[in-house]
Structures are given as C-alpha cells and as structure tokens.
Image (cartoon, rainbow, N blue to C red; front, top):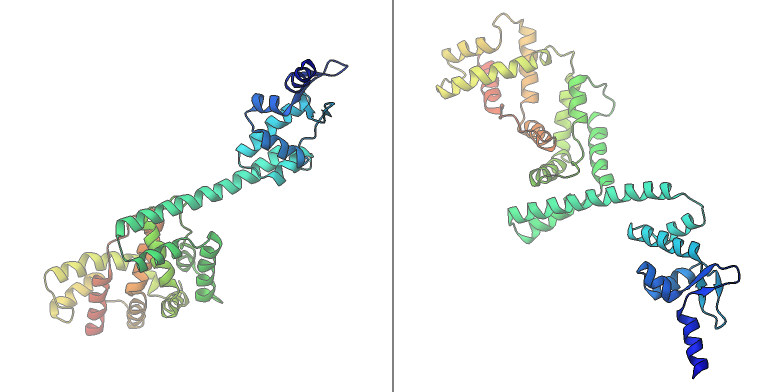
Length: 315
C-alpha cells in the first residue's frame, strides 16, 4: 500500500531533476494553462512541443520553457492561426509578425465577407420578396470580389477597347467601383442592377458611341452648360404646357441653344443629344452615385427629350 501511494505521489507532484530544474506533468500543465490534457498530448504528438524528459513510468515531463511554449501555441491558436502556421513559427521558419500580418489580411477579407452577408440579409428582410428573388439577391451579392472586379474589367474592355478616352469618357469607364466594405442595402441593390445593366450589349454600344464622339465634338463642348439650361428652361416649359414645336417652344429653345449657333454645330448638337439622352445611361450614373454613397441627381431625361423635340421642330 505504501509503495502504491509513493507511485501516485510521484505522478502528481512536481518533479525535480538532479540540477534542480522543475519538470511538470501533463496534468500540471493542464491546470496551469487551462488547456485540456487531450490538447497537450495532441500538440506533443504533433511535434509542436517535445517532452523535456520522461518519468520512470514513461509519463511525459516538461520544463518551464516548454510550458511557455504551450502558452504561446495556445495564444496563436486562439488568434485563429492554423497548426501548420504554428509549426512553422515554432520551428522558426517564419516569424510571428509575418504570420500575424498574413492572418490579419485573411481576417480583413473574412470581415468584409461577413459585412456583405449582413447587408444582403438586411436587403432580403427589407424586400420580403419571393424565394426566387431572395436566391438571386444572395447569389449576385455573394460574387467573390475577384468576380465582381471581372465584371467591371469586362465591361470596360468590351465597351472602350481601341478608344483613346477623353476625360469625360474616362469617368464613365472608371467610376463603376467595387462594393464598399460595409454596403448599405441600397448599395447591394445598386450593384445588382448595375451588373445587369452593363452586361447588355446594346447599352455597351451606346456608351461606346458616346466615347467615340469624344471631346473633339462641338456638341460635347456644350454638355454641362446645356444640361443646366435644359433643366431650367425646358422643365419650366413643360410645367407651363409649352409644346416644343410651338412658337413659344422656339423662344424657350433660343434660351437653351444660342440662335446664332452655326448650322453644322447645331446639327452636331442635335445628334449628340440623341446619343447621350438615354434612360439607361442616366440610370447608370444614378447607380454609380448610390455606390459611391451619394444621392443620385434628379432625372434630366424629360427636359432633354423636350429639347430634342424642339431642335427637331425648329432646326
């Protein structure tokens, strides 16, 4: 009986080697670190932390340095670093800083994906649509970042290939941005609609024609001022029920387009307007505004449609 008690004591108590170094059993390390006995044995069997010695009965014993290594491995695992990376750190093949940087990047990507998933769920909850709509929203919004970028790249390449872009056309080509890191439900909707819009060949050809007209076009030189004048005068004309082909309509037209504009520039302006005044092009810019966190501008299409009709009627 006394011999059995002695063996039990040796298994449970702190072990001292001849030089006074303290050695710890698996059970003692578990109590000190909060790790399970199974985890300690598994890490030891994996070669992460080799026992310092063995007891007479063959039990693993670890010195203080080994205990510190168990603490380090536990910390790395709690940070989510995989065993393979931990093994490289422990073998000094990579530094903790290198692994931490790589892991931080991975966590950033995971956080972005989780934020996107949250935004999608909010969109679905807000819509309360059919199962088919829900599945489509989920599928499109969960395209990988690489695939979403591919959509943008294909749109730009197919639409503007071979064209030397002026400043305005570059804006058209470059402002279709990636979803923000924490998109609002309306930005999810905008991205889905935009991805569908830019996939249309007819829409791409329309933008290509706009780009081909370029800054050298006399019409495009009037673009920004013309839009502002059209919104002011054509909208008022519509409010007052002034027909574009009437005498009063000519007076309004002269307030928007200078009556002494040369005939060739006037014709150029007319053709340019008929190209750029497109519901889909305007919707593109509205969606771009939403993606960039801005309120879309009011529609100019009614005013531009009135202006085109007035130009057609009065030459």
